[in-house]
Image (cartoon, rainbow, N blue to C red):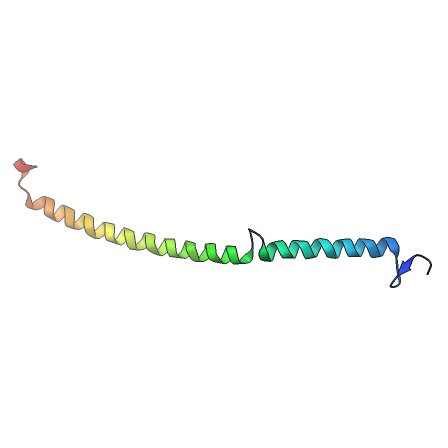
Length: 80
């Protein structure tokens, strides 16, 4: 047993275990942390929703401005 585990030196084995532990923690944070993939997907969906809402509001604003200027033309100049 000359200081080896699974055919590796103790130093190499411990280094490998440390790397696997680090990678496991990193993957856990990426998948389940506050900056995780589900959060990213939710934010992308929210962004798409807000862009669609912005487009809808701009169209509504154009329609209302057109209506406003049409009504404004109906009021005589001295009443304004």
